[in-house]
Length: 188
Image (cartoon, rainbow, N blue to C red; front, side, top):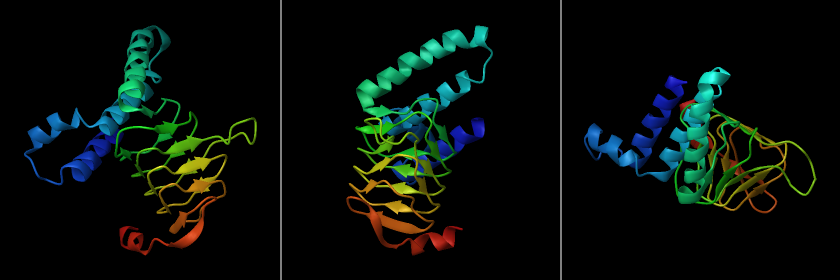
């Protein structure tokens, strides 16, 4: 759990500041990055569910209040029931909704306005499973029980309702494969 949060911090420091400030200034500035605050509150919520019930109650109440504050002030909904790997990065303020039960792999980046959830209206239960090193562009929707492969890229405003293979680049409504993520091969 601690390792996951450390990797989250490292990713945010790299993405947000790229060594532009001394470390202590970066850590203070992180407190004002909405995506970082959302991920930190999420990790705290996950931690509270590992505690035994009598001890957990006050921490869960605190987590609930913090998570509602993040939803209201940052526009990011990331419930503790989501399973997210280390290095999760939510880049921007607002409109990001992650349904409980979604599984997100290691080192994934989620832009603003993204929805990861069910198809809704009683159609198709199930939620997405996101692989490792996936980038989800602004406004993208990933709906239903789909699997997004490792190193995939989901373009801005894409609506994904079918599985996406590893290294694929998808875009459109509904999303279709428009290319390959060849830049990720060096990261394997």
